[in-house]
Length: 327
Length: 164
Image 1 (cartoon, rainbow over the protein chains, first blue to last red):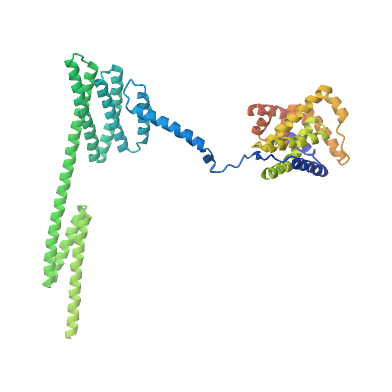
Image 2 (cartoon, rainbow over the protein chains, first blue to last red; image 1 turned 90 degrees about the vertical axis):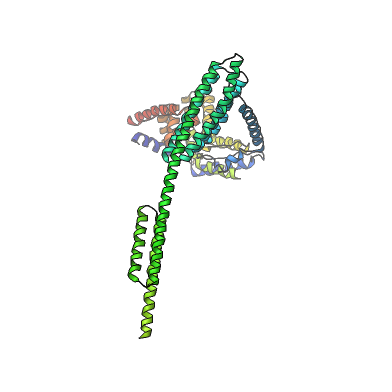
């Protein structure tokens, strides 16, 4: 702070009340307060510059019964509109509520890729239902179909992305499930849609937009059919490959059991050298299993080898005890 | 009871500052004491009526500002500030040090040279250590306005002390 301000502060600080003045004024003030106590109804408060102390539970005060009632009525109204909107089709007054409110909420609740894919499949189903309803009620308009077409393309892109990602991660079963689901939905709706298109033609009320959309969806259906087939064959190959590995492991186990049997026989005949050979054989087999990443089988081999080694030790100790007894 | 204690604490903490603030604005020691008491009485009455005061210091200064403005306006109707000074002067009461009273007269002269608005701002900012935000709230102007006016006031006080 510069000197001017400091001097100014020093000068002003010299102006003060004397101690006697302070006492007199304070007594006057307190007497005034006694004469004018706060009214019973008064709920006023005094807070310093730091502001009032607010209870951490303060937000709960907001939820008074009247507020609850108001919120409840509002929630019921929203729910009622939302349910009515679900049955709407393009061109209806509540259709924007269905798309921008109901479905936006559902979409925001899908937090995993699986859930997102399921939501997109469901939305595709809804759009196809709407198309069928429009066609059945003879309310088809180009702008409605264009809108539906655009949305189905968006869902398709997301579903395809999920299938590709699942497949590349090795989750073939999930990819097949999604592909198969969407294929089934296209098949079911296209059957109905084609029937309606045919009826139109018979009545000479051909609707080129609907026929066009129907053909486009047919292409989509074919794509998912092919994809499901291809993914299934990949999964079958992987399954058969796994089966081969299991067969090989079983064969190794059989060999090991045979070796164990031979070893046990050798121990019984006290042919120690032969027994040791058996142990080495078991250990070699175990190592092979480790190379094949089959630790479970390897453990079995080593366990058997250890068992035989223990039996040899017991026999050897027994022989020593017997010889000592003879001496 | 809690409000009473809080108010008593506020009286102990801010009474002298409010007195000083009134004193530099009305240039009369006895009147400043009365205005200071009136400020606290009005504030107490507001609390007693059940009003909630979030920032007691700012509230006290607002009341004091209004009271001193009324006082100055009332006086201006009857006499010029110079006449007023001659009439009431800074004569110290019997229990006030004569040197102190003389010093007060000297400072008031300096502050008068900065103008009413500038002296008010200088006291709030540098004597009472108020934030720009608090001053803006009390005076009912924006923070930018306070900053600009304060800058000008500081320039004036610098000039005055430089020429001493």
